[in-house]
Amino acid sequence: MSKLRMLMICRMAKPEEVLIVEDENGNIVRETMKDNDVLVQYKIMRETLIYLSHLDHEDTEKQMLKKLSKQLSGEDWNWNNLNTLCWAIGSISGSMMEEQENRFLVMVIRDLLNLCEITKGKDNKAVIASNIMYVVGQYPRFLRAHWKFLKTVVNKLFEFILFSRWAAYTETFYHSCIACYIRHGM
Image (cartoon, rainbow, N blue to C red; front, top):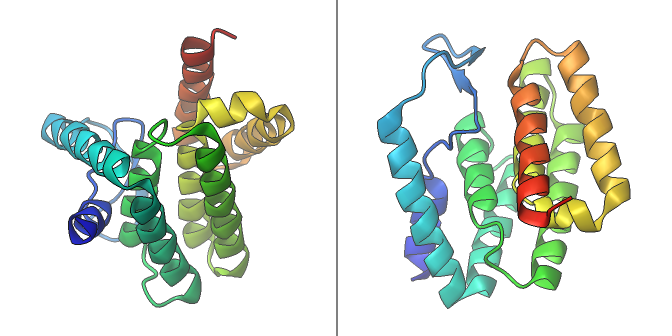
């Protein structure tokens, strides 16, 4: 089962909320059209990863944190590896007990922020920041329980929206607001 979890994490399909892609020249651009096949694939992979997480959440967490630590060390660093990992992390939102999920998410965000600090290059930092915002946006239960953190995230999103070339952050903000409202009746 552990190998299957890692395979799912490494090959996670792009979720609907992700609006930026790498073009054929290696540049990060806003996606203009949704790929329905990829969305269906994401939903199936998400369900599978949630089931696998329910069977052994500790192994799921361990696999994800191990892969994230390889990103930090530079051993496994590239945009695609980070993206698929963050999409997988976002996909298991709600599959753990709240305390476990909070602890896991704090470790993930801490490591992603550290990765952003040590990584060079504007595009690399933008990809990492985009993944941080995606992951955070997938965990409205955490955001609702941690208002100070939510305020920081919203301020950072506004900063990205104002000073970034990517409008994807507007979508992240919108989806975060909707998810917090729908899931928690704010």
